[in-house]
Every structure is written in C-alpha cells, then in structure tokens.
Amino acid sequence: MSAVMGRSEKGRHAARKTPRGTLFALVTHTIRSCSRGIVIWGAALGLYSAAMVASFTTIEGAADQLNQLMQAYPKGMMEAFGITNLADPANYVNSQVFGFAPLALAFFPIMALAGSIAGAEERGTIDVLLGNPLPRWQLVIGNFVAVALSLLAIAGIVGLLTWGTAALMDVELSVKQVADAVLNLWPICVLSGALALLCSAFSHRRGLAIAIPAFLIFGMYLLDTIGRASDDLEDLRPYSVFYYYGSAIEHGIDWAHFGGITLVALALVLLAVLAFQRRDIYT
Amino acid sequence: MSVAIETEGLSKRYGRKAPGIEDVNLVVAPGEVFGFLGPNGAGKTTTIRTLLGFLKPTGGSATVFGLDIRRDSVEIRARVGNLPGEFALEDRMTGEGLLKYFARLRGVKDLGYAHELAERLGADLRRPMRRLSRGNKQKIGLVQAMFHRPPLLILDEPTGGLDPLVQEEFLDIIEETQAEGRTVFFSSHNLAEVERVCDRVGIIRGGKLVAVETTDTLVDKSFRHVRLTFEEPVDGESFGALPGVEDLKSDGTKVSFTLYDNLDVVIKQAARHRLVNMEYDRPSLEEVFLTYYGNHKNGEGA
Image 1 (cartoon, rainbow over the protein chains, first blue to last red):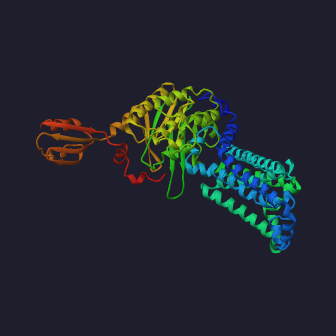
Image 2 (cartoon, each protein chain N blue to C red; image 1 turned 180 degrees about the vertical axis):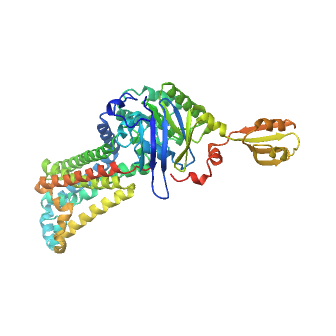
Image 3 (cartoon, rainbow over the protein chains, first blue to last red; image 1 turned 135 degrees about the horizontal axis):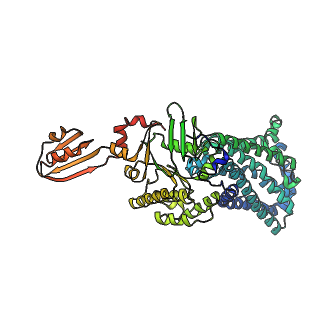
C-alpha cells in the first residue's frame, strides 16, 4: 500500500485544516478554570497582608521601644526575618508578609501545573483533550502562560487589598512600593510552577510533580533564611532562589534578578516541552 | 484513493511483562465501518492510542489518510473524532461548556450538529460532569467525538454504559456516518452491534492481529447456545451423539448444549419429542475468542 504521502497529496484526502488559535483557546480556558483559585489565593494572601498593614497602626507609636527590644535579640535572627526598623511600614510589612509570601504563593502554581499533565493523566482527562488537534508543546506552554497570568491576577488582588488598607489606615505605603512588592512575588512563583511543570512532563504522577518542587522551594527558603543567620551557611545562600528575592517594597525591584529567575523558569519550561514531546501518555 | 488507516508492522512494547502490540498490519478503507475486536488487554486500546500519537510506537509504521502517526499527529487529530475507552471529563464543566471549548480548539463555529447529536442521544449538556452518571458522560464523550463531522471516527468501546435505546440510536448515527462516506473504526465487545454495522472486523489477541475478516465470516464461525425444554423427559445422550454438539447438559425435560454446526440435525432430533420451548442464543464475543482464538491468558497483556 501507499507509503507516507507528500504534503501536496495529503490535502486531497479528507482535507481538513489544522485550526489556528488553539493556544489562545487553551490559555483562556485554563485561566477560567483557575478563576476560583485566583480569587481564593488572592483573597487569602491579600486579606492577611491587609491585616498586617492594619496592625502597623497599633505598633506605630511603640515602634521605638520595639526596636530597642529587638536589639536584644541575636542579630542573625533579625536578619533572618528581614527586620531592620519596625518604625518603617515598608520594613514592617516586608518582615510580616512579603518575606515569606513567595513561599506560600508558590503552592498555587505548583498545584496547578503539576495537575496540567500528570494530573490530567491521573484524572483521565488528557486523552479527550489531546483528541483535539492540540500540539503537545501548546499544552505545556499554554498551561504555563495561563498560570503565569493567573499569578499576576493574584498579585493584583493582593496589591489592591494591601494598598487599599494602607490608604484607609493612613499607613505610608505608596502605590509603587506595593506594586513592586507584589510583582516581585512573580518570578519565584513562576519558577516554582516551571519546576512542577517539568516534573509533570517527566513523570506520570501528580504527587511526585507536587512533592519535588515543594521540597526544593521549601529547602531553598530554609537555606536562605538560616544562611542569613549562620556564617556556616552564608556561602550557600546564592544556591537559593530566595537569595535573589530581596525586599522590593523597601528597595524596589532588582530587575536583573527578576529577569534572571524568569529566564531560569523559561529554560525549565523548554525542558518540559522537550520531555513531554518524547514520552508516552498514560491514563 | 488513499486508505483511511494503514499500519505496517506496528509495534508498541511496554516491557517484558506487558508486550503491548506486535507487528500489526492493518488496512482500513475510506468509508468503511471497521470493528476492532479482542478480549480485554489484547491491545485494542494500545493500537488506537498509538495511532493517535499518545503512545510512541517501538516498531513499524502507520498512517492515517496518508499522514504519518509520528510526524503528523496534530494533522491526524484534526481529521479524527476520538472517543477513548477510559476517559474522564472535567468535573466542573458542563457538556455545553466542553463542546464550546472543543469547538474553539477545532475552529468549529456552528454547534448545531452537536446539539442535534446531544438531543438524539439524550445527553444532558447543562449539568456539570460531576453530577452525571457514567452513561451520560459516555453520551457527551460520543458527542464531542462526532460533532465536528470528522472524516474518521475512532471509538473505543463506544456503547459501554449506554442503555439499549441509546445504543440503537448510536448505531443509526454510525450508519448515517458511513452513508456520508466517512470512516468508522471502533472497538467493541458487543457482537450484535458489530454484526449490524461493521463491514469487516480485525481480531487482536495477545497484541497480535490474528484475523481480519468480513463480519459475515465472523458470525458464521460462531457457535450457538441451545436450550430445549420438552413436555416429557428425554434421553439427553441422543443429542450428545449428534455431530457439532458439545458441552451437553441434560436434566429430565431440559437439555442444553453448545452447537457448532448441523442445526438441521438437531431440529430433526428435537422434533421427535413434544417441544415446549427452544432458546437459541449467540455467544458473547469473548466466548467466540475463547473458542476460536485460544485461551484467555494469551489475550492479556496490553
């Protein structure tokens, strides 16, 4: 019988164009699927942040005494938690919220992207979806883009609640400070999601695709936090992504670090595409 | 004209203990309704998933409408409507939402045919998937496979979970699909539905395609289960001695056996007594396999 046909010959048999716009359809659908998560994560983190901003007004008058009290604590411990001056609302909010917020928020992209491939295999939904003319690379990229955009939406909600509370309570936090703080959450979260996506693309198990990036991100957080307090671990801090995080609410975004982390995340996504292209899909 | 499906030595091995499929050579003509039959684990789903690019073949080659399954998987899936054997749909989505999403992925503007199919099959498109029974999910699975009128339908156990009336409607749709010149490739355990709609059948066992026959040939090969009830006790051995009669069971007025041939002789023997009832049943497809294609263990693996 016939061997594989040339491109021109193919068109005569059951001609049907491969549709365009599949990536856009996938991204919009995935964002819609994430909408509940966006609201929950945005509200949870945003309300916590708003509560911390509001609590600043209660300690504002006693900040000098608190700073004196804090001086009695080991210097390493103060550095570990990013506390330099509690009378400064930016430093206070950073130490209470944005210092660990990327660690907490990282679980949103980890859960979402671990579920995008390995999770879809476990649930049995992937065969129906990929029964459509959707290239595998688009499934990887589309989910990543959707989750990256969802993270921006969460950051927006957190930012609005934080800045809104600051404005209402007369806490001195500018729009730019808050915008920098919430935008700076994005690279680490995107990197965490990219790790989960890579694991999801390699393995067929969602649990593994959650556990590995969660373990790595938490490990890097501990390394950086303890490294600030311990001279022995100080040299290892550059191996943690949190070393490059900084305090954007106080010093603005370090765009070199922002771009560097984002580039690493994109490299992991590229690896995920290559891994998923080559492997079998199981349900 | 190019064939709809063509495989040459197509193989997929999972490992030593699960051989998958081996050296499958198959040709399905355009416009044909082809039944793909085999016991559970014989390799039907592996073959289908390899054709669709979900599994990477470890040997051989295959084309769908002349398109290579390794290189042109996306173009193949643009021409194929697929119903997987084991599938789930997103819990929170409604059938309507799923069809709109898939219509966007396929560039389909008009959902008129989708709604017509849903109405004919009685699919509930308004409720979220998590609230639907298995049968209703299967109906939505069928609609999403067929709504874009693909040149080739690949359906893995399409009638599983459907009630008899819906099965009948589905078979009508398959016949209409064929009348439009489109091709259908489906796997099934249901001999009656295969007999009704399939032009030819391929039989796979232990990962190997052991036969490709016309449906008539397959049905002719089948034996029948016969149960006779007489008004008075009869000598069952008189039936056991007839050619083509096996597995005889006799209990006074009731005689049952498996008949491979010579129905005429059996009827004449039964007519010597006053017959109260006669049941003459087709075997299940599984039984046909067990009889004609070896023991069941050989069929396991994929």
